[in-house]
Amino acid sequence: MNWKRGSIFCLSIFLATYQTGIGMPIRAMAAPLDTATLISDKEDGVHQAKIKYEKWMKKYPNCVHPAKEWKKVNGKYQYPVTPYDKEWGSYGKKEERYVACQIPQKILDELSTEELLELVLDCPLTVNMYLYDGIKDGVKKMAQYLNGMDELLGREDCLSVVHQYYAKYNIPEKQQLDYEELLPGNNPDYYTIVDDEKLMRKAEKDANVMIALNLCEAIIEIASDKNIISMEEKQAVAKTILQKEKEKNKSQCVDGPSVEKEQADSILNNCLRAYSGQPVSEIAGNGQKLASTRSGSPYFVLPDGGKVYYTIPNSSRKFTADEISKVLNQYKQFRNIYGDPVITVAGEGGTTAYNCYNYAWLKKYDPQNLWKKCTLNNDEAFRNYRYFTKSSHPGGIGWIGSNARHAVYTIRKSYDYIDGNNRLYSAPLVKSKWGPKGLLVQHPLNRGEYQCETSDMTWFC
Image 1 (cartoon, helix red, strand yellow):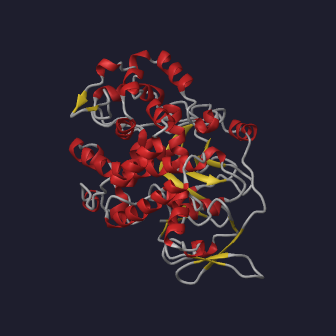
Image 2 (cartoon, helix red, strand yellow):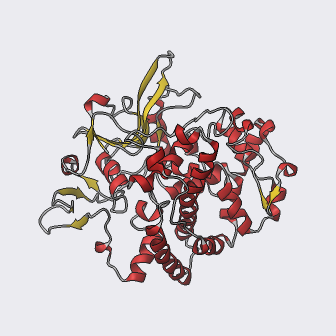
Image 3 (tube, one colour):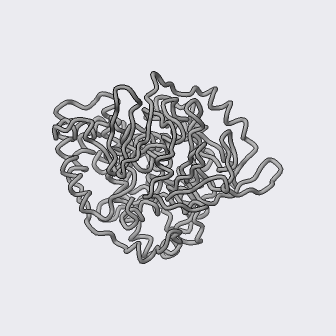
């Protein structure tokens, strides 16, 4: 990811993942969600959230904002409390923040789908869709927490409205802020922006570009999964995507994960291939190409000619709720300062189709190339590749750690947590796949089945 163009995405993830605590403005954007509590939810959580909303609103009535508190500015409803208000800082639990963002039913009933989409995009917590293993899954999860998102996905005209909004969306070419100047070096101090409300509002405008594009793309994917998109709509989407790709390439605001990059068989990629006439083998990222031999294993070819061999599993399966619970229960004594478990599943635990190397390296550098459908045999070619800068510690979000036995994807370079005896520990917070037959887990580097000390890892940017 280009640093100049990727800075704002890193900033948005920083805000979505961690408590920023600066008193008046932006405080506690959102604590990481405990994915383990979502296992029993029905059908990906979409259209299943009403009972949860009602339970939370009864438990935290002081956080409920009735319709009379929702004011219109220039014809658009505004959230009564946002991270720029002092009241937001008083919400100590994630549930309280979600309750504060629930849209009163009276307003939901009067909103057109176009108005509802814009209100969902304005929600301070929509950015939390990035906290999961994929953007599409993140949108589904947000439908479990935000009634506006749930209502939007349930509208019959959702797909047509989203596609129309996406097609007309004006992608700005320039960012509001110069992030290279504000965040110098390899270990940027995001509080330079977070502590300044004027800068933060500009940064938010930059971040909202990616949020708008990714939300629309994810909803198109969800419609495809549920087979409610016609061939004519697919063709229209393909034309729109081609146009948007040209606009994205000109914009400083567009970088970081996207639905196309995360899922090789996404409708967006399939539409692009069908419309442009390109075969699948020609779709590759970061200068990498796919190759195979009749007698040997298939492999990725790096720009310098290095080969990364992989295998394609004959079959794969998802992990059951019982398997996930059994693993998580082994580490329930480790908690963060909010009392939430520090070892949780990511992306519903993943599948047996890929391993740690596959997840860490291809998630960051080439996620569209089968990273959930193949298993890398080793990561020696990646680890020895001259493009990567080595460091003894992770520099921040997105850094890869590897020691030839295991590989991890960094979520936070330093993370404090306690055990059942209130003993304090600190380690990088990472996501990693615990072997091809193990879960995809978010955990402190030094805890879990594949625990490693920082000194054991060789870090790459």
